[in-house]
Length: 450
Image (tube, rainbow, N blue to C red; front, side, top):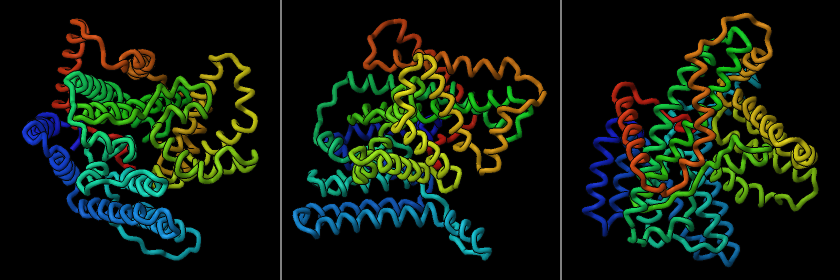
């Protein structure tokens, strides 16, 4: 069930809002049950895994809270983290490990073809953060229902933003839910819906065919890469907008996940603006425990490379994602050692251009299914092929996307000031978006695969 699908917009969401209003005193339990229905819609087979992971982390969290002042508390925390990673590794990476060993030793290594449980990377990271936070002194969940809702709350369950229990726990008992927040939530949801169906899915019609077939010219290759650069941003940020909007509608303020990342002047700044909740998670639970920036420059560089390579692996069980993470780890390390000081001496426009170019080159690894196709596409960018030039209708959506990137910060100033022009504009935008959802098959969000 997708946020922009007719069944969600005209059946699931209205029924959930009606029930929420009726059972407002039991809203946490009601939202939890609704979230499980939402998850089961994808594949009921994996609901026991989500429940089992939730029960496991809640129970171990109790053990950690009761004994965190002694060595046993650290042991329970480490045991819980290990179990979470073991579950994630089995379901997500055993196929990749088996295929790699088969290639390395020349003998067939059997693997289990069980499919990837939806959202396993996200709810595993949230479970790990909960155990570590409790060990560090945060209050554990008061009830299983609250903890389960923290893990499974449907707006953020599938693709984030990654939330932490200490940040959302006070909101469970807060019944103060002003209408201005609900209006802000509706505004944010419609904005995300429009970005998905009008921008991201339109850009996909340009990028997907070019990546699927070898580009015949450098112009076509650059068009496909530029379209994908905007597509993945609008696709992922639109999900975040809808998730934050739904959270506000149901009385929860979820963290922001993007802050105009393509305006960054360095790769370091880009990762402070892109998928911010994942970047903060990596910083607090991997980078800082490894020593952060308090060590010597070589050690700091090694820490950056390690954590970013693991971040790439988190995104997908493929060597392209590992190299994508390694690519950013090396860039961050180089900036830390020497490049950042050099970049600051350049004009601002060159800093922006350099950063966006590096990000675009990284998206090749992210988008292509294997290393040979990534290398082939990279060569096409600088080829001298004389294929047909892209048509204007393929270039126009990219130009519109670029224009929207500059307008978006103003649109995200919430809550917006009420005006007749704004109301009419959003009414038209809503109608166009809904008509498109009825007239075409809903395409899943890119980050659903992680």
